Amino acid sequence: MRLLIAGTGSGCGKTTASILLMACLKRRGLSVAPYKAGPDYIDPGFHRRVCGRASYNLDTWLMDDGEIRRLLMNDADISVIEGVMGYYDGLDAAWMRCSTWELARMTRTPVLLVVDASGGAASVAATVKGFQLLKPDSGISGVLVNRASGERHYELIKHAVKEYTGLDCAGYLTKQAVIELPSRHLGLVTARETPDLMDRINETAVMAEQTLDLDKVLSIASDAPATGPAKPTRCRFRRDGYRLGVALDEAFHFYYDANLEVLKAMGMELVFFSPIRDAALPEDLDGLYIGGGYPEVYAEQLEKNAGMRQSIKTALENGMRCYGECGGLMYLSERIDGREMCGVLPINCRMTGRLQRFGYVTVEDKTGLKFPAHEFHHAVAEPTDDISCAYNLIKASAPDKSWTCGYEKYNTLAAFAHVYFAHRPDIIERFWP
Image (cartoon, rainbow, N blue to C red; front, side, top):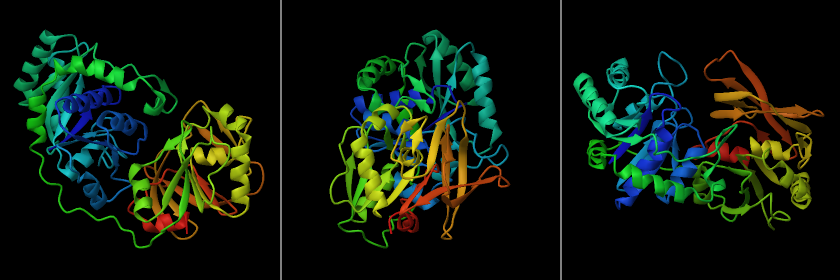
């Protein structure tokens, strides 16, 4: 069984609906395999906590069809995919590339459309009708009503939706069925930083069980056909015994699970360490991987841990191979908003009040590699000395716009771009040859 939870737009409640639906299915005794459409790192963290297993991103820009089908193969009773933005929103308004709709069509997954019922009744049916008709192959198989004032309100909407669209509603969530989660500049505060998360979710799931029609949800999900032949993970070279240090704590935890898994499948030993708490790098490392996260939020703690900063600087000056991604780039710089960082790269990073880069890009590397990536950051990097750039980046939605990044020094490469490389051994070889 497989189901995709889509929304009419950002803010309609699809993340809350997805989390509560996963929780309710788990409470029924089913094993749930969670997924997230698009490149988001934060929502999969909540999925993992609820479902007790990795949540894989499914992204039609970063991955090819075979890789997506491979990731969808699992041993769970049901797969639940949370969509991204509005159902039809993607790279462009005409072809809807990289949208949730494109993913649903490619994977042939039935769609449950989340609609915000606040202040509406029959008008909610008009919204659903519009989404149903915009594309003849919309794939919408049912509706989940969010923010209903109560059962009477839901019944009015349910009747109108059935009358004008022929679609069934699969229950509703009330305005009280809300998981209170704080936000910051890149989205929700992460699951790792929310210690009472499961208490909040379970408390709200008890309410949701009274209003969701789980039997209807399962009936819709059971209509999903097989995804088709999967593409095996390609490990054309081995790295047996290679000890790769991976930064992991509150400041650095934006990693795609599939990326880490393929590194282990190649024979690498992933050695996790905390730049906030550990005094120095683990011993006998062959390379480093410092992913994204929130180093700007934890800049004071990172600055205070001078031992770790010096340990990293010494290792990289001595030639250790390192790949830093977004937050990793910032940590390898000289400063973040005046706070001392590792000082490996002659760059100062400064936070701004708005997004500097957001969206899909194509990376053209100086080695001739070309690969898709994603940028999403408020920071700017300002060189303090000469430093070479390995990347030319081209904006996917506006190919006439390009810029340089991919700062290189010693054997260190760091860039703002987030890269999915689980099915691209050539990229792995570039980062850790």
